[in-house]
Image 1: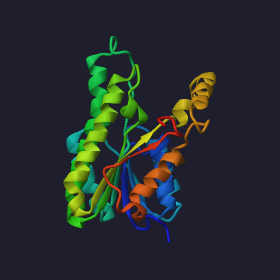
Image 2: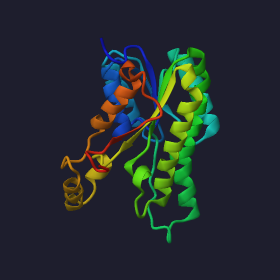
Image 3: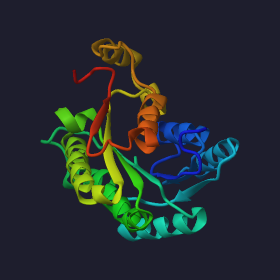
Length: 248
C-alpha cells in the first residue's frame, strides 16, 4: 500500500528544485498531484508527463500564489478537476538578498508577498474544502534562515519566520476539525540553483554541516511525505528542521 494512495496534493512552485522533488516522491507514493509554476511551461509539461508515468493524475497550473484572487480560483479549479484537496504544500518562494542598508522597499515587499502572503492566500483558498472534508494536511516551507536569521537576508528571514507563526496559529484554529498544519525548515539544499555557485564556497558550506553534505530535494520531500501521510496523524503545529544538523 502506498502512503498517499488517492490523496490529492497541491504543490506551489512545483516545477523545479524542492517542489519538483516533492511532486516526484508524492506521485511515487500514489498521490494525485496539482502543481503551480510561474513561467516554465516546458518544464511543467515534462513534469506532468513524468508524474503521470507513476499511474496518478497530474496537472500543472500557471498561477501566481502571491495573487489572492488567482489562488481562490486555482483551488476551485483543482477541487473541480480532482474531486478533493487533501494536502497543500506552500513551497513557492524567491530571494532578493541584500544588506538592510542597500535593500530597496520594492525588494522587501516582493519577497514578503511571494513567500509569506502566498501562504495566507493558498491556505485560505483550501481551508473551506478541508473543513467540509473534516481532514487535511497543510505543510509550509520555511527555512533555517527563518529560525535563526541570516545577514543580508532580512526580507527572506522575515518572510520565513512569519510562516512559522502563521503555521502554529492555523494549527490551533483548525485542529479540532482534523486538519493539521506543520512547517519544514530546510537547510542547505543542493538544487539547479546551487549548482551555479562557486564550488569552493559550496564545499565550505558542506564542511560546516555536521552530516558533511548538502541536502537533496528528496530529503525535504521525505519529511513532507511523513507530514502528508497518516504516519503523522498526531503531529500538528510543529517545525521540522531538515538541515543535516546545521541548527544543532
